[in-house]
Each structure stands twice: as structure tokens, then as C-alpha cells.
Image (cartoon, rainbow, N blue to C red):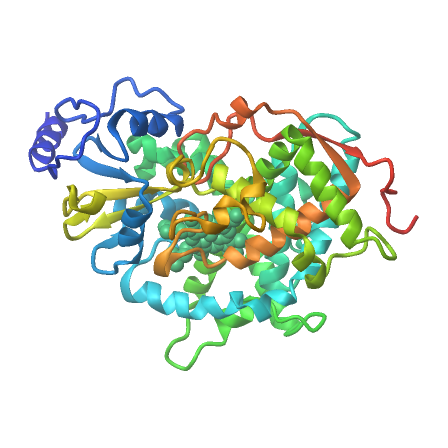
Length: 481
Ligand code: HEM
């Protein structure tokens, strides 16, 4: 009775809006019992079609307004007065990423962002190209071991992305910090737990840690803590490894009085690792699966690679100069991020009314705005034939090179734009160059299967990223042969 009275009280005080949306039921809003899970991202696509470019839904008394107009997105993402991260989503996120850059607000966020930004400066990233080459080499060895079988490559991509970020942070190989390779694909995975935001009862701490996902997360977090402790000890010993300055030094080297505490440093390591691993693995998963479905673009990418790597050892590590010449690979990565943004949306709480749709509608104070990158990237007025995978739109003279400002935001926008965008961009291009020089990718997931994405923080199709990798006839698998 107390719970119902509280729900009734909150429902009566809910923020009201004229923004259209599906019919609500008192107390529950748009939640329907029993809750049918997984709820797919396509539910938003249906609402977008039915209610227009700005629509709302109520999770109980909580009002969410979904937007996909570039001008509205800019307003929400760039105005510091009107937004903070949505407290409910952050309550869930804190459990899985710790309390770091993603979840903090205000002055704490400013201080942490100032400490972390220099670590991702282009100069600091230059030294990481070799690390990405090494991740690519190990990934290709594992793909070769699959002997052309159709597999879900996601665990291999997760392990590879973990290798990159761990080496970047500590300057130490992943195997030395966690010799048990079976843990590499899981230790920084959050997608199952992050999906609990649709099951509010599971976010209550006692319930969460009793659930199967909660127990699994706890185990991975303990493994992660051990990995970080070893990494910190080794990074302290080798102040510089192979002339490389590991990212951790940027967190240590703060001005007196601005130092991050040990716990803050641990939280940022967890934040950077978790946010850097699942996103790049997801993005590469979609890209490889799409290339399997579009052999015409795969052939173009391989012709470009054969050309750029024509002299000497064709499987040599990629250099920054090589990468700057890979325009087709670059367009493929951009198109994959457009069609399947690995972070499909972000949510901000409004502390003031915000006019949307050129003043037609108002998102009231106290509501949360969900900026849907996925819906935006699939609007026909912004990207003609939006559902088609056409990297050509990002090549010189292509339609996306003249796109509307703020219409393409796979890394978000404004002051909270992804801190690791450049890191991810270089990493993805190096890894694709490694895989496509060695293998022909054959499809294992249909386009329809790739579209079956449950709502969570990152996009992951229900059936994973299934492909098979067959050695290209004209390239030896081992560069020394
Ligand atoms: C393809 C790969 C990636 C994608 C698509 C991606 C996407 C995003 C997006 C959309 C945001 C903004 C969210 C918002 O506005 O609320 C974000 C924030 C963030 N990303 Fe990424 N990301 C990627 C890779 C990475 C990597 C490699 C790292 C770290 C090494 C990273 C670390 C972060 C952090 C720490 C934030 C929070 C920034 C802040 O609030 O100040 N991301 N990312």
C-alpha cells in the first residue's frame, strides 16, 4: 500500500508536456506489465514513425523526451545550464563503470576531464599505433584459428580491444596482467548489467548482487581490480616502456592541489577501460558483419589496401602515413558508425525548460531528454536512402560530406563528447587494415539479425556478430613466410 501511495504521489507530480507519445496508464505511464524483455531499439523507430521527430514516454512518473533533430541535439548537448546526466541512468552506470568521467557532473567532471584530455591528444596517440598493430596481429591469429568457421567474433574483438586499452594505460601487455586468457573477453563487459535500467527492481543493490548478472559482474570486477593493481605496480616500476608514456602518467602528473586520489584514479581506469572496450568491439563487429553482407565494399577496401601496402612486406604493421591513405576504410568506418552507432543514445536531465522543434514544443524542467543518435543518423532528410549501407556518401564529393551541422554524432557532441574518439578511430582503422589484408569476410548474420538490438548503453544484436574469415588466396597468412 505504501509503494502504491508513493507511486500515486509521484505520478500526480510528474512533469507534464504537450509532446506527443503513446497513451499512458496512471502510475505506470508507458510501462506495460508484465514487462516484455528484451525491449528492442526498434520500439523507438516505431514511435518516431507514429508520433513524429519529437515524442515522449513515461517510465512510471519519469518523463523522457526523445529527440533526433540536429538543432535540438546541439541545444541539449552544448548548453551547460540545462543539463546534467540523468540520475537514474547514472545510478545504473555507476555500478558498472564506477564513479568516473562518464557519471560525474559539475566541478568534479571539469577537474577529471582536464586531467584526462591530454592523454588523448593526437601526439600521445601517435605512439599507440604499434599497440593497435599488435592487437590486430593477435586478433588475426585467433581468426585464422577459427579455420573459416562461422563464429560470433564479438569475444575476439572484446579481447583485442582490452589488449589495446590495457597496453595504452599501463604500458604493459595484457597477458602479463591477466594470464588467464579466458577472462579477456569478459572482464570489461557491461552490456548485460547496463540493460538492467529497464528493470528498476534489479537496480536495488541487494537485489542486484543476488541476481545472476550481478554475481557475474562482481566476479569480473574483482578480476579487474587485481589486473589494475598489477598494472599500477608495473607502471610504477617502468616509468617509460619502449619510449612510450603510458596514459596512467597523465593521471598521476597533476599540478599540486589538483591531484586525483587513488580511488579516483582507479575509477577513471575502470571508466576508460569499460567505455573503450565494448564500444570499439561493437563498432568493429558491425563493420565486419556489414562488409560480409557487402562484398563490393570489401573488395574496394582490399584493392586500396593492396595498393597502399604494395611495397615490401604486405602484412607489415600499418603506419600513420598508411592510415592517411586509406580513404575507403575511413568511409566504411564512418558509414558503419552512422548506421549502427555503438552508443545509440545519451540521456540528460533538464534543470530548465528547453524549447524544441524550433519553438513548437517544450521539454519541461525535470524531464530527461534522450538524444537518439540512431534515429538521427537514419533520417532520410539528413542521409538519403538512410537504411542503405553506402560508404560512398563519406567519400570525396559524397552527400555526407555536405551534411547538416550536428547531424552525424556517433561520438556525441558538446563538452561531453567522447574523450576516446580519436583513440577509437585510429584503433578501428588499424584493426580493419589488419583483418582485411589477410581475410575475406563472409556473412553469418543477416541484416535483419543485426537490427535486433536490445535497449542498453551499447548496441549489441541479440545473435551477436557472426561472420567467417577465409584467408585471401593471394596473401600468405604469416608475414615472415
Ligand atoms: C567506436 C567507439 C566509441 C564510440 C562510438 C563512443 C561513443 C561515445 C559517446 C556517444 C559519448 C558521449 C555520451 C554522452 O554525451 O553522454 C562517449 C563518451 C565517453 N567516451 Fe566514448 N566512444 C567510443 C570509444 C571510446 C574509447 C576508446 C574511450 C576511452 C579510451 C571512450 C571513453 C569515453 C568517456 C570517458 C566518455 C565520457 C566523456 C565525458 O562525459 O566527459 N570512448 N563515447
